[in-house]
Length: 158
Image 1 (tube, rainbow, N blue to C red):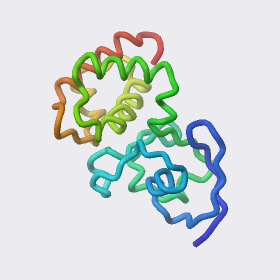
Image 2 (cartoon, rainbow, N blue to C red):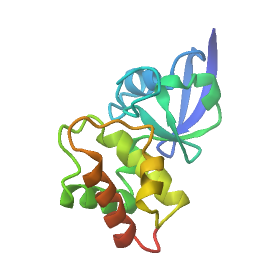
Image 3 (cartoon, one colour):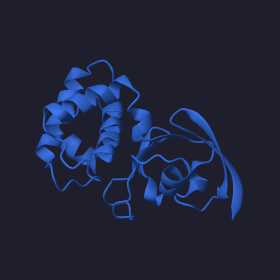
């Protein structure tokens, strides 16, 4: 069913005339040409499509556009414009927490969500915060170290 839909994506108002049953992931990638969120499993289990929806991490492959009307969505492209992203990116690089990069945008979105709620998480809290994200290349130990490094480097920011 076609509808006029208004939402905010990466801080900018977006007006769409489209089917409100479409997946948020498809709208982001096809209509808005934001390629950071990726189609991984298509079932909400891998986190490659993670975005922030009103500051909460969600798998955009499982979110119908109707649930986004009037909401604020942040993709990795929008997050990359922040100082918090720069701290997290540097920590990921320094800890070797990036290899192929397919999962990285979703991991960083999940890490932002976690650090926003808990600026000094334990290893166990990081594991729980990343539990919806899969990485087949890097291994989680380096990612956990990267998030801890970012938390320390960004004290007072999160």
